[in-house]
Image (cartoon, rainbow, N blue to C red; front, side, top):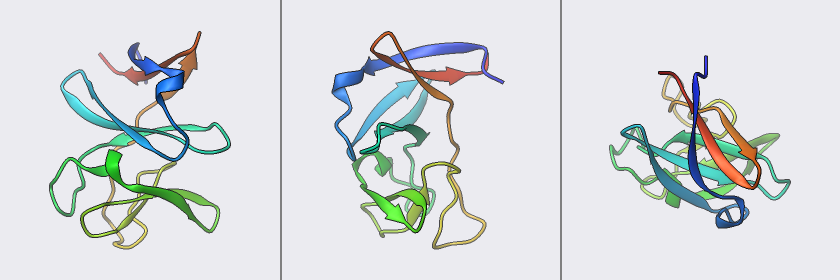
Length: 110
């Protein structure tokens, strides 16, 4: 349940298919906008390598799933669910995200 929305950046800061890292209430979050304008937010930390790098990953698709491939070992994470498509049982947290008056915001539970 989202109790508060935290400002991340202006909409124009998000280039399609490129990530932005943000610190939200002490958590590193990777924020993406796909070519169709959909926004996604997942943990920035790659659970396989332990590095905070997912915002630097390669955005694309695998079947119907929008994904980001980690720049470390190239495992693909579904941007909708956070599930790793290459290692069953591994996932990252997803975050509520919205666009409000030209501002990208992440939802947090307080």
